[in-house]
Length: 374
Ligand SMILES: *Cc1c(COP(=O)(O)O)cnc(C)c1O
Ligand code: SF4
Image (cartoon, rainbow, N blue to C red; front, top):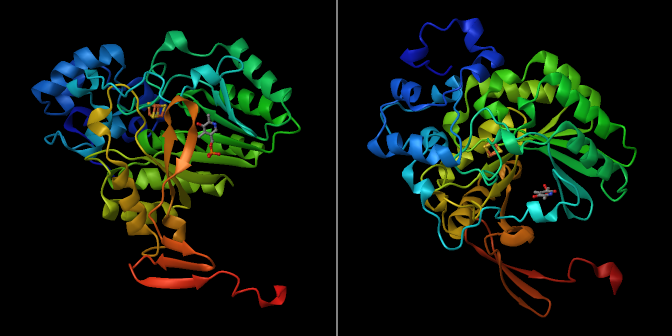
């Protein structure tokens, strides 16, 4: 159980465990943040200046995971602005994945042949400082209007190639149950749509949102996949674990998409422990994303080699189920490409030379395994 900061000492347990209370009492301004954390001068300035560009919001629960004294705390770094956010490197873009230019209709990106991404809302319980959609997330004026969502869903209806829709945002679980159910029902009425995915960080930032009432609704829309976004083992609390198993009990297939962040999770041993914890709670590590070329995230970006080193430290050393795909989502809409450690060291005729996870050399003869063909 996370230790509640002194500022929230008088909050009753039933309030603390009520997602609506958490949502209503999000920390949005300097005066409250300052009473919860000992801020550096840089953070204090950034809460005013940087959050004018990209809003700050932190649930009391997520704040309770932070080290009040240590500005390098991995949870704090994900949610408390710093002045480095205002620095824009030459290679950085406002819309790094060109999502807005691959929109056949508002609020839907159709990039890959058989699946599409729907932006259902622009709100989130916590605004992650590394968010690659900060151009619109947290800005209520850019939020999709109801008829625009209908238009996006109609596009799916008249595009039979789409068999998989990702409901994203923002965080779709910031919508009221009723509204979310309306969106899911509309999607489910499309005969050619095989699977629906929900992308949500609520299990991490607001785990009390995963109520029995919600999951009772969700199980009407199977096959339903839920992808969440754990980045650090400090986020792996009892409450978060319960949120994951509640979703799994309701029949959702739960996965995790970690964003690789310098000084937060560029640590292979920590990632291994976190992924093992996720598996124990029936959540399968799916992706590790290289931090996108979004404006103001240079302080988070690692070399690609850091991601490869994480995979190297996982593959073979722990359950294959704990090994996600490390991907770079290419700027300008190239899509996701996996980057792997080099296990194949040479390929000469039928002879393939490999190094295994432990660095030992092996040879594989192509064709040798299929004598029946000769
Ligand atoms: C990531 C993404 C998807 C889903 O990709 P998968 O590899 O199938 O998980 C779909 N559309 C867009 C635009 C995406 O960025
Ligand atoms: S929850 Fe997702 S969409 Fe929302 S701020 Fe974080 S990364 Fe961005």
